Amino acid sequence: MLEEYKSYITYTKGLSENTVKGYISDIKNFLDFTKDKNINNDLVDLYLIDLNKKKTSQKTKQRFMSSLIQFINWNNEKYPGNKIDIDRVDIKSGVYLPDTIQLEEINKLINFYNHNNFLESRNKTLIDFLFSTACRVSEVCNVKLSDIDFHDDFIIVTGKGSKQRIIPLGTQLKLNLLDYINIRKKYINKDLNNLFLTKNKNPMERTSVFRVVKNTAINVGLKQSIHPHTLRHSAATQMLEAGCDLRTLQEFLGHSSVSTTQIYTKLTKEFISEVFQESHPRA
Image 1 (tube, rainbow, N blue to C red):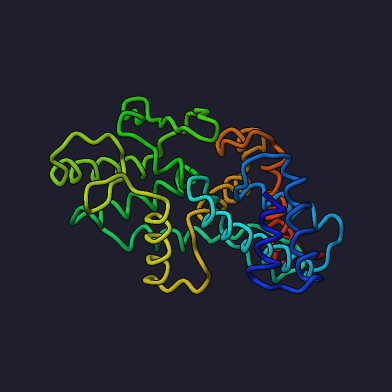
Image 2: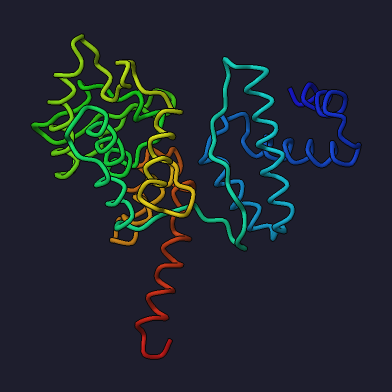
């Protein structure tokens, strides 16, 4: 595939020899790092952290992200049946950390909507679900009504490789789910098991979820770029700050390795440092 992409950027795009060498080197190093795993946000996070450990310059990391995005765009156009979906990372600071937002801002997103009609109720519950469960977008799109146990308060989530995990159902999300499902029953007059549906009564897709989150962030006045993964990152970081241990968080997030979960310890170290500077008498 890499040779095919090299031919494309050399002959179709007409890029210079040095530019082609740089792009191909970036992609080859990343693919070697992934070891044939499916490209996703978590792998990109880990690779950027690995580049940080190697003291890679900001310019090189920015070029890598540009190379990766262009490679993915080519792959998705050339092989639509094997699409790769990742969030673009804007590399500005010296150390890459996942984007997060505070609880106050998350509440603004959730509370922008009410349960007056189907779409508002769905959007409110969708955003709450993304944060409360810290699920990946693909997992949220695949959640079924039958996956939710309101009696014992848990949700069965099917993650990567069809691996299932149990996620506790929080009190506030439970209330929103119950309201949404009641409205959903009146709106949907056929037997559809997917939890989140479009206004045309089809299962929601990734792009629809991204659009809801992004538009809601704009509507509540959040200046930074917010995407569904921001809510996952924010939930993980806030759980660590509240004392959750890494192994438990690993299970909650559905990470196959705790090394992926360790991304969030960088964020909490930053948080602890800030608290120290603000509160310790000898800071």
